[in-house]
Length: 341
Ligand code: IDC
Image: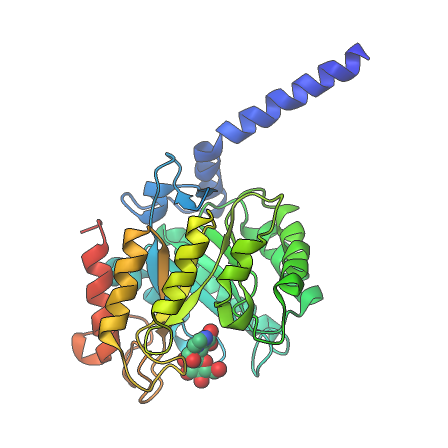
């Protein structure tokens, strides 16, 4: 009996040492990956993230707001998935975080073009590790593909989970055919897979109706896990005050929200840009310390949410005349909010 108690105390001792050792662990992770965190980079500054109540916290337990830019689908804009773009976004757009939106079930995408998609993802994630940028690994689809998702995220957690840079977005947008209960069941399976290898990086969960039913989340969130956030996606010309009200409801119930995708356009990605509504969203996000990411690094002709004009170079270094109107707007926004000058 005494022996068992001794083992118990010893285990507790080592667990607590391990828990306190997170910054040292980041250095060890850096060494094992052969990178050093650039001084002043987002990850060097904020380190390992965690969630407390509705807030995102850094390694010093300060509340932080991360702002960034999403890559476009790996399916149609693979040319931009390279270190040059990660570096340019971090240095010139002053992003804290990028989002790797890997296509899953269209063509070509992860389920039918695995090796190439994984190679693209690796390029972006490795570049983010070296640059000291946070990066979201995003399962960019609406359907669950549960078995494949669990296997994929286990692999990602095993490979990258020891780096503080990594966040997991386990489903881009459930649509209106999936209930919140079904999303929760899917999330439980994927979270278990990730947590088997990565005990603490942030996991972001979507909600029904293209990440708009945040009220349903607020009324019945997942329980029993650490460092979970929920995403809301908005397109300001389609989703206005009512969605901000629903977010406010969730925040009032201590639900941690991370807007992993948004733009000023309509939900189609085009139509028109509603600047007053977009601004109303920025005020809302900033005053509530909700992190957000703009959609997307793509150069689709005439698409308002694409940040690039056709012909923009594939590896960053973009001039103003290579950015779209929304690209210029978001660049100025990100630079304006950034405390990294
Ligand atoms: C859009 C792209 C567009 C592409 C389309 C394919 O901008 O070029 O043809 O996907 O489905 C989302 C999705 C995101 C969409 C975006 C704009 O997460 O994949 O990208 N959007 O429609 N949710 C709401 C809007």
